Length: 146
Ligand SMILES: CC(C)(COP(=O)(O)OP(=O)(O)OC[C@H]1O[C@@H](n2cnc3c(N)ncnc32)[C@H](O)[C@@H]1OP(=O)(O)O)[C@@H](O)C(=O)NCCC(=O)NCCS
Image (cartoon, rainbow, N blue to C red; front, side, top):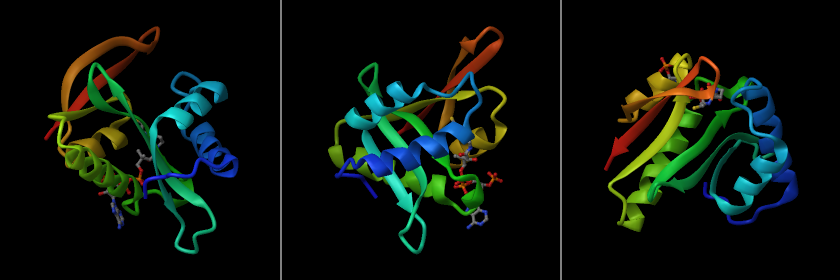
């Protein structure tokens, strides 16, 4: 679902998932994460009992195009289609805005699991981003044409 009410407790759950999901090179400092949370279009999925956030994604804009700034799923809930569902929701949301011709995101070259998911969802590698995450830590810019 798209989050309309930016409660602090939701941010705290998101920050906790984010913290354990990314290593120090990819992880954003909490202040930056909070800033993006406050300004992005935020998508969240709750557990079936609605008690906790299990996956989230932030949609922002980069170079005039919708940009998936982050997507992550709580480690206990991975492999159940949650991130894929969020990417579908994002695509539906962007299509409904009727303005964009694509959605982009960046992924670490070694993050094969995420890349497989993005390929399944129609994202294709647009550019190799040398040292994007730090020295010898390269990224891939991927784009889903709409
Ligand atoms: C990458 C990440 C977001 C994927 O989240 P996820 O919710 O597990 O993703 P999905 O379940 O939608 O898809 C992952 C896999 O589960 C499979 N899957 C989807 N629905 C499924 C279901 N109902 N049952 C079993 N498997 C399923 C998908 O086919 C996919 O399989 P694959 O790995 O063979 O491609 C998650 O691993 C994560 O948070 N990683 C750490 C943070 C990260 O790297 N984020 C991306 C940064 S760019």
